[in-house]
Structure formats: structure tokens, C-alpha cells
Length: 293
Image 1 (cartoon, rainbow, N blue to C red):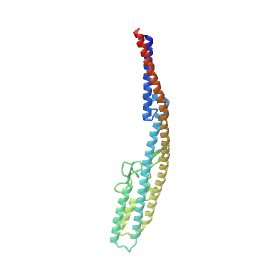
Image 2: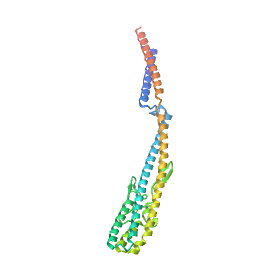
Image 3: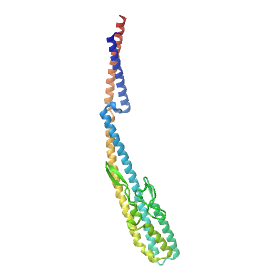
Image 4: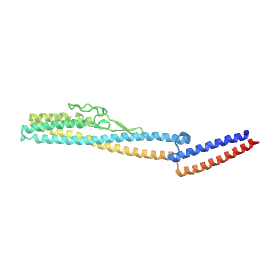
């Protein structure tokens, strides 16, 4: 084979290889439905896809955090509703047994019920959610109320990001609801009521009525805060979900190719490949004839 024919053969082989590679790429894109899968497909588009993937990851994480926070707040709202009902029951007991018509055995039984209510209130204050103890402030890994009824958590906010660089509290002030910070310590109040029922101190039992109403109000205030916070986080989650959906649509549009367009390109690539085969055969035939002479 002469030098000229050899060069032609090398060139034809290279064209054949390129054509086969192009057909493989188009076949892969048609099978996957994605026209961009690596930097060489389109460096600028691939860079945009990587950047948007990071955005999608951040939005997904943000929405999950917002939803977990909202879930804990709903749990907190329900728990505070139970605490409110419990305090209403304690006040009913105080009203009933401040009446001297009731005997001491009945007041002793009422004292036991108040003791049980107090234990239930401790359990409510120590409710645990998805992120830990929901009334403990930032001390979410430990119960905020100890066995004596002392509040040992803090009243600091747990902030979550709802937009780039924007944060909002995602917890409640459990210290306000369950300690003297709100005006009345419910555990001290219930303990005193239990003691006074057992002692038959009618004056002190009557004296508990106003504080019981006050502590009920402080729990209700925090419950109201819970409702407002849930709405705020739900709105933020909805906005984040919308932004996430928009980013995912753009990502899909950048990644995916038009199947009809890809099929047309595949047909053209296949025709070019077949032409290259034909040309290569001609080059080989010419080279064979020349070698005979």
C-alpha cells in the first residue's frame, strides 16, 4: 500500500471510529432520555446542571427541616391543649373541694387525683418530638422538667432557615408555659393544691383558684404561639417546595433531549457512518489493486 493510500486509510478509519462513537452517544441519550451526562457533552450546560443540583439539594434539605420543625410544633400545640385541659380539671377540683360540704375522705381522694395530674403535666412538659424534647429550648437532648417539677431547660430559640440567609424560630418558650417565668409555676401550684386538699385547708384551696386560672392562661398563650409558628413554617415549606419544583423542572429540561430530535440525529449519524464504511471499502479496494502492480 502506497503512502497516499495509507493516509487515506488512516483518515477513513478515524472517521469510522468517530461515527461509531457518535452513534453510541446518541443511542445512550435516547435510551436514558438525557442529552447531558458528562462535561464533554456541553461544558457550560453541565456546569449549570451541577450548580442547579446543589440548589436542589439545599432546597430539599431546607424543606425537610421546615417540615420536621412544623411537625414538632403541631405536637407541641396538641400537648399544650392537653396541659390546658389538665389545668381546667385541677381548677374544677379546687372549686368543688373548697366547699365545706365535702368530707375529708373525698378531699384525700381529690389530692391523689391532683398528684396524678401533676405527674401527667410533667410528662407533657417532657414530650419528645422529631428533634428532641420540644419544650426544652435548645437543650433538646434532655427532659426540661425534672422529677421534682423544676424546669431545667432554657428559653432560647431554635432557628431554621426559611430562605437564603433568613431564619425564624422553630420552637416554643416552654419555660414560659411550665415555670414561674410565665407568672405562675404550675408544678408548685399543683403540689400546694395537693397538700392543702390533704390538710383540709379550705382557705388555701380557694386561694388556688386565681393562680390556676392564671397558669391556664400562660399555657394558652404559648399554645397560640404554636399555631402562629406552624402557619409560618407551613408557608415557608410551601414556598420552598414551589422553588424546588421549579428548579427540578429546569434541571430536567437541561438534562433531557428531545427524543424526536435525537432520533433524527441518530438517523443522520447512521447514514454518515454507512457512507464512511462505503468510502473505506473503496479505499481498501484501490489499495489492493495498486499493490498488485
